[in-house]
Figure 1: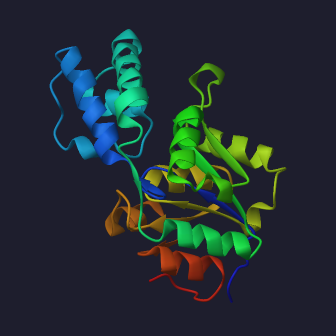
Figure 2 (figure 1 turned 90 degrees about the horizontal axis):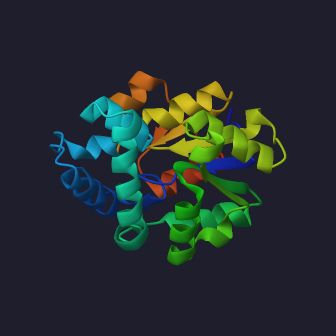
Amino acid sequence: MSITYDTLLFDLDGTLIDSAPGVLGCLKKALDTFGIPEPQELKRFMGPPLTDSLKMFCGLEGQAAEKVLNTYRELYSTEGIFNTTAYSGIEKMLEKLSAEGKTLAVATCKSEDFALRILNDLGIAKYFDFIGGSEIASGRNSKDKVIEYVMEKLGQPDRNSTLMVGDRLYDVNGAGKCGIGCLYALWGYGSTDEAKACGAHDTVTTTESCTDYVLGRQQAAG
C-alpha cells in the first residue's frame, strides 16, 4: 500500500542541480592558493558540508580550514555559482508535483543565499514554498539542523507524510535524525551501494520515477 506524501524536501547539489563543475573548480583554486595538495577523487567533496570534507580529506580544521573556506566562497560567489545546470526533467517534475498540491521545499547544506541565487537564475525557485540552507553564524551547519529549520518554516508538517529526496548518505542520515524517510536519487553523486548501506527508504533512477513514487503510482522505485 503506497504512502501519501504531502511535503517534499529536496536536497540541492546532486538532486536538483549538477553544481560539480563550479564547486570543484573553485575548491581546487582555493586549495592551490594555500599550497594544499589536491586530494584524490575531489568529487568526494560533493555531498557533505565543506567543513567536514576539508577535515576528512585534507586534514584541515580551525583557522586553516576557515581560510580555505573564505577563499572558496569568494571564488564561488563570483565565478562558480552559475556554472550549474538543472538535471534533465527537474522542472517538469516540480511542475507536476506542485500541480498536485504538494508542498515543496529545499533543504541544503549550501548557504541559503547561494541556493536562492542559483534557483532563481535557473527559473525554478517559483516551485518552492521555502528554500532553506546553512548559516554558519547561527550554527545551522549540518543536514539535520537544516531540515529542522525548514520544517519549522513550513509550520511543522506531519513527518509521516514528509519525504526527503537526496543523493547522498548525508541526506538519508540527516532525514533519519528528524524522523523523516529519504528517497535516494541515483542520478546524483551517490551510488546504489551507498543507498543500500545507509538505509535509504527507496531509490529512484529518473525524475519521472521520482514523480511516480511520490504520487503513489508505484510502490518500488525504478
